[in-house]
Image 1 (cartoon, helix red, strand yellow):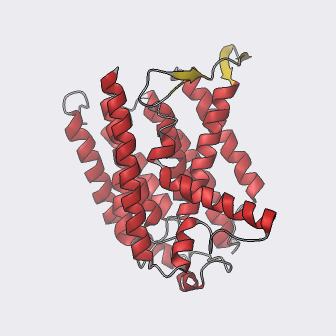
Image 2: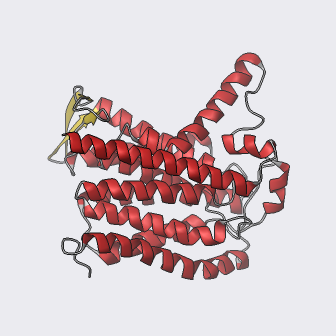
Length: 347
């Protein structure tokens, strides 16, 4: 077992490499199994017509990503409470995504679970994560403003509840923020997962930024988890790059989206999440604006939503969109880390 306290930099680096190698080695077997079981993607008929050729491509790549992340993280050892609750939220939303994939593949419903049911379970998972963060990990309800020593306390409206002899603090405002972050980020990553390599590449970049932030905070178990997720996504990307041999599916998108939100909470960078994960914010906002514009004016502001489909309809190739979105994500994530770093130096 590695000793995090003795060789922290080496441990974080090797975690990413191990996750990359293990994922890269296992995915060919996983793809064969999915093909044998005839588990393929159901493509939406109202999406870009060029995507219809992807019908039947193996999906549920997120299942193996999560297995690799959990296995590598537990094998490295020294699992702390911060890493544990982030991993629990990731796996819980991954299980929800698996149920969604199951509905799509076996019932051949391209939209999967009912939206209300999915939203309800996402909210329950997010609230449970928030309660654990406050009561088990003892995270503060203070939300810091980047580059300042200022912020605001969302624990002002708190209720104490006794459950089986345990006294739980329920900070309603902060729980609302955590729930919004996790539900929004999870669904935003799911919206982004519409082109080959797009979600996996951006998730890898965002996770590297959070690994750096956690390392700066001396939360090495959190940095290790972020590194495991980054490495597993890079291993998956070898087979998910255009033309994709396998898709992530909702198992990966919902689970890893929840992981990003969880990292924003446990590193106390709730507001910086909007910048670090800015590409997901843009994708979700494009859908909101498209729907609102059509309902209010009868006109669409984009050729097609989410945003990546707009550029696809303009004639950009999938590869061009993917690489440029990676570049934008790298800029935003790097700038977010820079703001965090400067803020810690000033203190």
